Amino acid sequence: MRMTMYTDFSLRVLIYLGAQEKDKLSTIQAISDAYGISKNHLMKVTHELGKLGYIHTVRGRGGGIRLAMEPEDINIGQVVRHTEDDFHLVECFDCQTNSCVITPVCGLRATLRLALNAYLKVLDEYTLQDYLHQKHKLADLLFNDTQDV
Image (cartoon, rainbow, N blue to C red):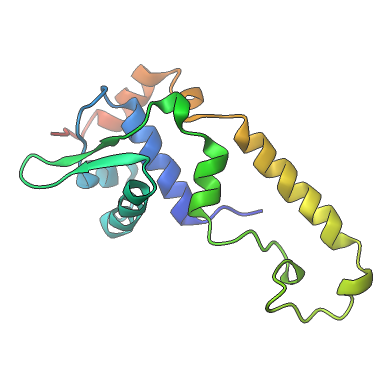
């Protein structure tokens, strides 16, 4: 299983906002600068995270983004499920496009399905709060050169 950049960036945004002081607004530019990743990608990510209810956006001068939920209420497994396009590890996982001739007798599909379910089950055991125990160290790394609103 390989996580998409979109999901990776979504998790990074949530960690950044979780490391921020409660209710303090952050800018997409500051997050982009902190991680050294594209502001354009982050704009798409933050828009979706807002639609999903994970972050709150404040428009206009002095605006920005912040967590819309408490970190302990943001389940990592759910974030991954919401931000991944699909979980088609192999062709036969997609019934619409599967053309593999051995699908009716292949045991690999069931094994890969078990592996995928185990992967998601592990992620379900964690919340954003689990990654914020060293909040001051995260802040040192993320906010050292960037100043948010």
